[in-house]
Image 1 (tube, rainbow, N blue to C red):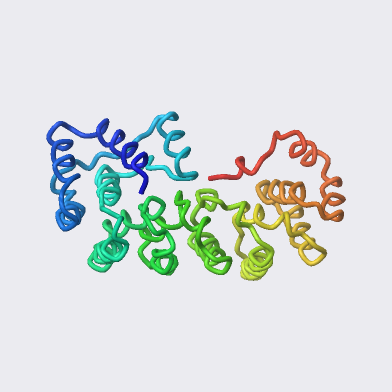
Image 2: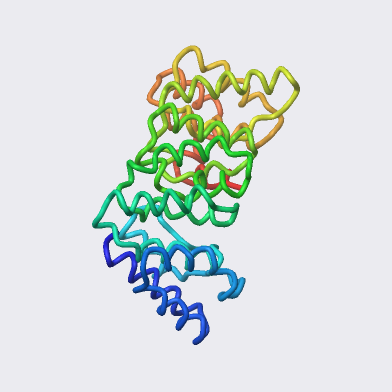
Length: 282
């Protein structure tokens, strides 16, 4: 991992630790791999339960190095654990991978959260693909969140199938999909039609569909999907109507633009930028 990332993580740690905590962290930085791994596990014994809050400059600095990567809202322990991983010598790939795999194999839940959160800063990113896709199937909510939300690794490395599974599980679990990094960049036709099927099942059962789901469909509208959008425009919920308008605005399909034009107030709002998908983010 580039030293610049390690340095930026340390700068954040330094601002959020006491003198004894910082001394302990620094004493481990140049330790052997085994000692670093031991420190990774032992971190809660030496660090407070503080939650990290970044200012906009700190957020920008991290994002400039790894797009979509942020430690805002992490615990101090999680941040320290990720920083320890950036101190592992990656020059010997076999040894490096073995050490990370050992941590995965022996981790308890909070350690797994740190490991999955660290994927964007680990060396040899393809090496962790199986671990990452396996986390999508996890029944541990915090582990799933660590890979699915605010994590740029899936958008960069997942196959379309694995990506779609991640998005679908996020929706099934009623998690906020706008926290998925790369959400709109990785939108695809197969996912759009799968979400349509999902909506039909929900509606048939008398249940609602999160309005934000439709931000993944607009670019792929065709005649088959237009009845879904009419259903949204006919909904009693304002959020459904807004989602329909926004999705139509995202579409180049003529029928979608024609349908949007029938709802003049909504058309004006989306065309002017007064209504955006951010207004449906909860």
